[in-house]
Amino acid sequence: MSRTPLHPTREQIELPMVLDCLSDPIRLAIVYQLAQQERVSSELRCGDFYALSGKSNLAYHFAKLRECGVMQTRVAGTNRFMRLRREDLDARFPGLLDAVISSAAKDADRLQLLTECDAVKVD
Amino acid sequence: MSRTPLHPTREQIELPMVLDCLSDPIRLAIVYQLAQQERVSSELRCGDFYALSGKSNLAYHFAKLRECGVMQTRVAGTNRFMRLRREDLDARFPGLLDAVISSAAKDADRLQLLTECDAVKVD
DNA sequence: CCCTATGTTCAACGTTTATTGAACTATCGA
DNA sequence: TCGATAGTTCAATAAACGTTGAACATAGGG
Image (cartoon, rainbow over all chains, first blue to last red; front, side, top):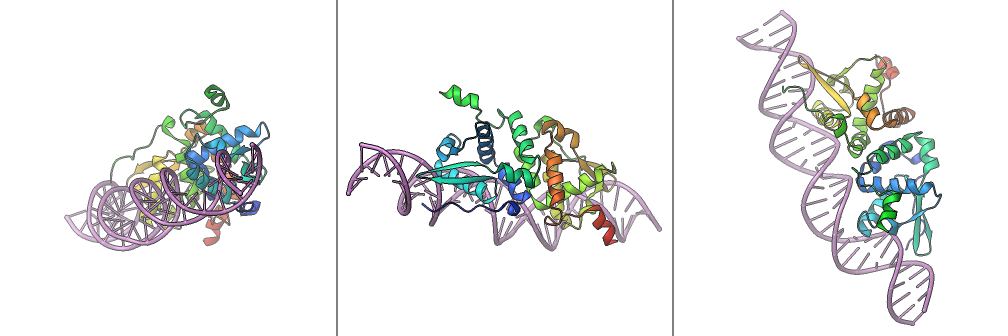
């Protein structure tokens, strides 16, 4: 497996790319789930998203989210942990991420987003 | 020319559709220009956007912006006046439009957006 | 009534996109 | 060292997208 994947610098993050990233339902769900996880200040593994799609399709979306500067991947053994690049996004586009997340939260059922409660319910 | 074009109701406006709309550079420029015009509380004609692209291509983008609920078109004679559906967008996705507009403003030159000053300069 | 100005619609095109499964790489644990 | 686990990469496909020019529809002014 390759080294730590390439990420754009903060200044290289472009608004249209970010919006395009967030416009895909699967990627929006990934971002939403990462945002939920922020509260616990921990990261998520790729496998934590298998409910959303197959792993090869997820790898495609992960790559896109990385290349657009929305999230960051840290390689640890055979796992890859990801988290939102909140600091960079907030610096570049103040209020944008929060507006998207809370808008998504309002439409959680319509967007078929998994909430923390759902995760518990499934158990 | 057909009657007043179809617009989705407020509740029919979907987040991914809106984000997708705003992710295209030309549509983002249209929205940005409409947002600037809001301050003067007036509308813009299709022709006011010819600097962005050809008219047939603009018509395509206008249709998309309309269908996604981002803007509204009012037919007046041979002209069509448009404005942002700010009230609806703010109600559905609080803070989103403003975050996008101000983010775009920060990158105005990178995004090749026309500002009010530019319009004056061209004169 | 014609001519012009304003926009839309249509067909065509090349490009990008999302999705799939199979093959592959790398790491960890027994 | 072997096998299982975690993800990526690749090739193939179908659908959606953005762009173009030509044709069309409509309203207003001489």
